[in-house]
Image (cartoon, rainbow, N blue to C red):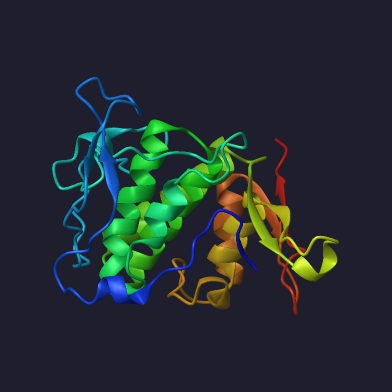
Length: 241
């Protein structure tokens, strides 16, 4: 299973230690997604030290990350998927050009937080939360830990009914094409917080996973955890009162 808009990463691009080469279009003076200037590369950060530009960087509706001088994507066009132009390069192509693991975690935050600043969506908020979660896994910074929790909570508070799309199971399609399907982001958010194996990273709420359910209750939500083997049947509900 993979994101339906994802492109396979080519590891050979990531042999340079301080610079990642990617094809980009910069935003013009007017700040729109058109009329940009073609460039061939930008330096991406490879460290895991993240200084938040403002208190709610990466948490909708704050858009301050788009003005952060440390943000390598602040002048880069980040296109959303367009059903009328499915082959156009999107934010997922940019994401796949970032190295996996520790070296790419900080760049992933800037990419998804910038996408969120330009287009409010649950998908962009969820990926931003995961990027912060990944950074915390590497730097154990309590400030980033708290920011990741705020970003995950924003998915529930502001985009509860949103979904992201994945594709798999080409054998089910008569033409052999991947089959797209959606997963509610409230379920993915809860699973990321509750279950270590959902992300492979240190959980943001340490100790017994029941403490995650308690924290979500304080946020105003109930969670019935997903069960093995697929972990695709979790249920998140909004508490009344």
